[in-house]
Amino acid sequence: QVPLVESGGGTVQAGGSLRLSCTASGSYSYLAWFRQTPGQEREGVAAVYTGGGFTYYADSVKGRFSISQDIDKNTVFLQMNSLRPEDTAMYYCVAKHTPGWSLSPVAYGYWGQGTQVTVSS
Image (cartoon, rainbow, N blue to C red; front, side):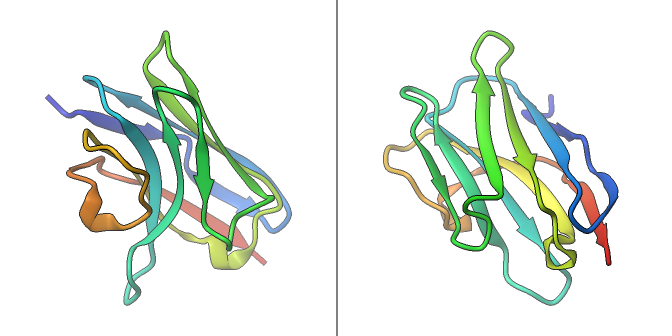
């Protein structure tokens, strides 16, 4: 069974918006979004503490992206506004059980298959 399944990716013009969704199987302390462009390091985008709703963002997306969760549906969202071409990447939903927030990829043991986001200029 795949624990994390993303959806909502696509192609959008610069300045537009997309909303990514991730349905999680099981219970986790933190759910987060990472992204990766070929040839670059994985970048932590945003994380949410499932127990209290506290959120954390990379500086590159702060003020433009918003992470949220629907507890009843066990789903996490990433609302992406004011998209830029440099936001183009494969976006992954990730999860961990351990305490403490993190935007480091090594902290997350569960990874979805990814959903592609392409922002055209």
